[in-house]
Image (cartoon, rainbow, N blue to C red; front, side):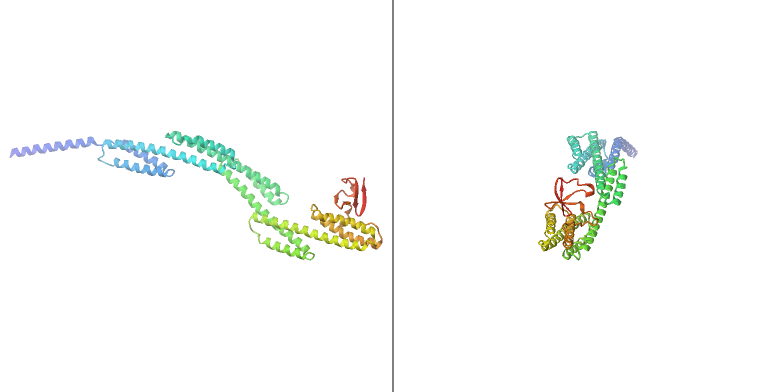
Length: 424
């Protein structure tokens, strides 16, 4: 019995010894995870920094981090497992960094190429510089050095930014130049708008910035300011054209009813365009202005033709009884016909010739009644008809009034107020 108990004690002690040995071995075999923990922590920090800018790379790195975390959290992982996971984690981060800088580099070149396409036509000098920068950078696309790729990414990015500044500055200068050029065209006719535009230009000129955003903002301010002013002026010109047409309409309604009706229709049609775009307003202002001018010329021609017809009709009635008066009338009628046939004469010339014909008939009738042999028709309300000279062919010539001498006339025979005058 004692022997059994003794043996049991011995077995028990042996078992306790073996258990103690196993416990000691287990403690000694626990893996050191310090390096793996640091590698995972560094990977997570880097992953957070690229999450927004490089989501695809961040997604891949997240999966790798979770894989290494499995080893980090595994109590049974051997040192060999931990070392492998640590090395794997560090290499994964390094590869991810290379992929990120390559992606950033490619994005920088892509952005530069896209911008290049937008400036090729209008900014050839800047386009050439940017094209050279892109071509020099492209061969480095497959480089695996993080430092090299980051450096040239910065070179491309900063080069692109500088060219954007140059383009923005050029656009700004062009907008100012365009505004000043437009200002010169409206100063006399539209002084109020000209003053507003002057203030806008002066305010824009005060900026001294190399910021693309600031330059683009003021370029837009000036450009939109000009557009708004052009619209206001187009509206004013449109209203003035309608007022001019309506004023002229009032003068012809009784004497030229057919043309008056046509003009009324045109005015009513054009009025319906009010409130539309600048281009439409300018177009219909031009249509109305040119149409009105054409109508004025047509009426002036018609009036002159009627006046000539009246003069010829009266001249026919006195040819036998008053041949000298008829002869003078014929000379003036020929002059008026020359004005009528020559497209170089203006509306004012036609209207003057019409008034002259009417006055000619009046004075011819007086001459016939009183027996005067010469005619001195003067259609000018201020008695300035002495400055109207004609060649024998009937062409009106411009010359100073008699009080200033007859300078400008070449030697020859002229008609002045129905009298033949020789200039020597």
